Length: 189
Image (cartoon, rainbow, N blue to C red):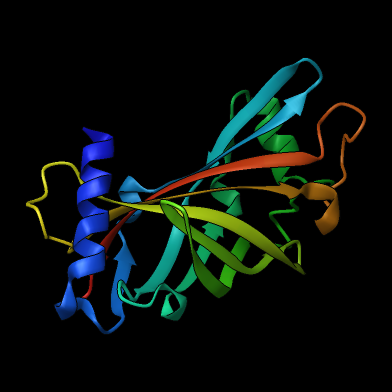
């Protein structure tokens, strides 16, 4: 069912002449979050961080004209066990008191297989670096064929926390943070 919805969306996206201009979308915050995972010795730390703002402009005819701007709330981050959440928000890792937000602003979007590659600048702890995420769009379950007013977008990627000075407990916690972002978005009429 998931793949069928995706294939139907691809057909719609490639043939929708009425969608020639970029369309603006806003986040449905209560149905969206940023999931993450990192190594903790032989185990994993998982968690999520709320998305507080997302502005998207999607051009279905020319994906390169699309833009993404996202803000995350570091203070609302949760982890698979309480100590990890405290440590992550503390001054040795994300320092949520000094840097309560993480931002991502796209600089380029390109079609990539069944999805798109979104290149942009992410700012963590006041440090801005280029990163690449892979994105796939889906019609939300129950949507009528051709209805692009409500979409789901899944973004995946990996960042190195040391690139942003988030080096606390590097003897116990892995440097690579795997991201799995699921956002529900709604077209602005």
